[in-house]
Image 1 (spheres, rainbow, N blue to C red):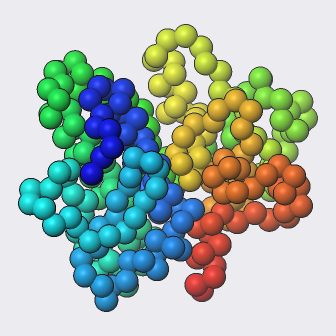
Image 2 (cartoon, rainbow, N blue to C red):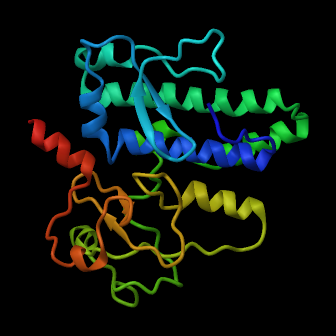
Length: 248
């Protein structure tokens, strides 16, 4: 099933990140497509995140036992029986569980020791869960953290009202990367800005845009918005908020 099986901690973590990115895409930027594919009239369906960062909704594998741990079965049956956001949150929770089971399946299969398992978990634990990204609970601050190194359009100006800040389509400031793991972890807990689509932290020279509805920040590339295009947007709605408004 897999072209190359991850064997080291770094390879397993890379596999985890790719599958995680695919699942987050399904539950955020591709949520309309994902919703339509989870037809309750179909048989038991599963959501798979693949190592190439794509996702698919499909029937479970027929082989017993399966080559890899299987995702939650029958996610489509609950779709119409609850609020969409609650259903997506439920799928996200099961997706987190599946991601961990796959990662530690590889760890067990290739004999990871105690220190390797601990290191793998720490690497995984540094990322927001799929549930946190989908529900928005991974967002620690309402606006991007203010920093003296900020070179965005609003830097050097008096503090603006929230409504004005939200309207400025600029990249959030780069977080200072001082020495020491404890300081980095503290920054993640107190001030890190995370993309509402992929869940990753801000990186240098990346354009970000804020949704004026849910107030989450997104990489421009994740929501297909360029800086030039953003200049002509008076009120930006992320894909998730746009799909919710379309259903009302």
